[in-house]
Length: 130
Length: 428
Image 1 (cartoon, chains in turn cyan, red):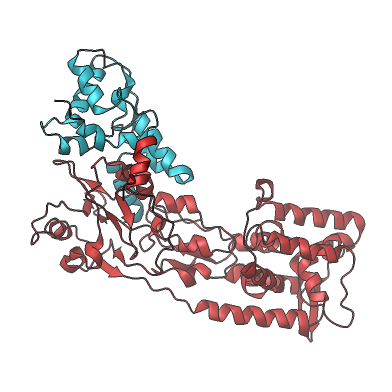
Image 2 (tube, chains in turn orange, red; image 1 turned 90 degrees about the vertical axis):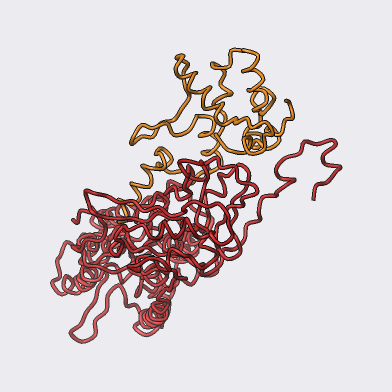
């Protein structure tokens, strides 16, 4: 079914100026189904992993889970994963494009805390202040 | 409303659906939740209460407060949204679901939220919490001003307050400054640099150093009178700059009416004043008179009034120049250039007292009031943004006590220099 509701609600449209069919959840799903080489495509790393598409899908397709699976496959097949890792614990933090977006939106006020994952950040904040 | 004409020939963006909120003045005293780590036992009643806050309305909810327990240190810490004055989550949210309300509470609009979690990535303490099972983002909305966690906390570690600043220190400082201005400028003519009343004599320490260099004679009386101000600085910090200096008072007055535009970077070096002091003493030794004292704005101000109070030549030029610096930054002269301040800074570096921003009470990035009011700009904004309570360099602090006066949570305090103030801090 090609209703395109997920594309309508996808926040990526607002985040990236080059948002198009290829990057949209519909495009990614389509190309996956057609068996195209999508694992090496950087567009799968643009997703924020939000719940919007899953919520509106009449067929119950979870594009969040789909992207998660695609990324896992991509890592397993040895593609270079553009992921920023937490400097403290090494856990994957954000895909590079999403990270770039966050940094651009925060502008000058970015601090070194942006390098850490939420769990480490919370622990460090607590240690500093308790 | 959606404008049909816009949809036909232009691309529709989020601005048409939900325009960027206008910059509003934040409310003066927003409600905030204070957390006292010394009282917290880590029981987690706040988390339970928070999970059940929507029980009567049958709405889904996860806890918006998290208790971190540390086994090694035995310390507990409750994490929750601080409702920043300029929230970073609002800036980072791609769907503009987060808004700061008129009442100062930052709320997530559930209709727009996509649970993407970018707000947690932008927050300095990751206060928007992601439920590990459902992936739902939950953030404190202070229960619209009546938080259940505060009511449920058995130890009283959480407290709802609107903050209360002292507010009376300025009523002490302004009269003292005015009085010393009138005394030093109008009553004792030509005084601050050197004056003698009976057995009591006072001398400007920078002037004393230049005098020493130029005349190559050490006057013991001069040494004693110059030491008065240095000893005062050793005991109380640079109170002279903040409370007594007549030129500082004039700069404060000028600063009240001029807007600030910032200074070029090459001027913003606090070592410049030490360099000026050294060069003033050096040229004094070479030339045999006191070159800086002839143009010193503090001294010229003192000499400007009275029977022979005439500003001549370079003195006439120095006043507008220094007053114009005030349009760059508040007290730019005192921050970067004043050689008298340089001498006092050396004394204050080993002085007895310091101003501290207490780590426990300070609300860090969500408030930053102290950084706003500090006239010499020594409170580190980037440290506050990282969630670290800033260390205030004693040598640069002019002890005006504006931060102590204005902190709504009583975090800015006067302490002796050997007192510990933050966990894991090394003193000295």
